[in-house]
Length: 180
Image (cartoon, rainbow, N blue to C red; front, top):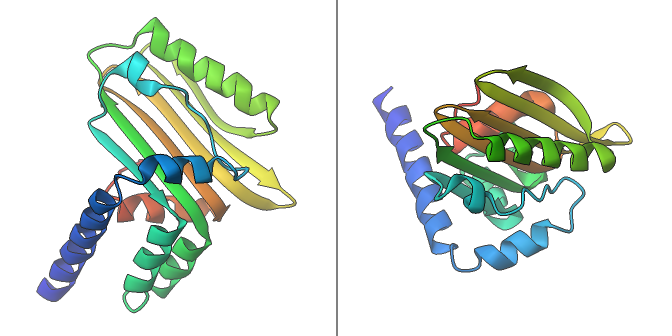
């Protein structure tokens, strides 16, 4: 049991270190992701929400490396990572739900609907908005996007590549992001 915990911590630490090492080419990586149909342009989230508390942007090469490193521990996850082109996660701490934040979710949602994305989940309440969209082409999910704006935080997730929706939770667990 102790070795599993150590292995998991080491995998996370290695992923974190590699992500930090690849921070400089992140802009080029972001541009490369824009070519895929599952990519979502959220605009400049910093203008609306300020500085992110968590920001992850990982491209295909690092995802493939993570897949290779986890192959002996979890072969199913390793195969899934190899099919992904990118994972982007932005988390912002809020003190309130702002009209500007709600408008951003509405505008991005309208853009996604116009671009052929399917709305899977919509939650509109006084204190939160949640949107989950999927880009599906020929029965293949090419992208999943999650947008959550609530009083305590705003979360924007974009998973790009050939995705089984049931695998999304496993992807986010590997990046230490709880989507439940």
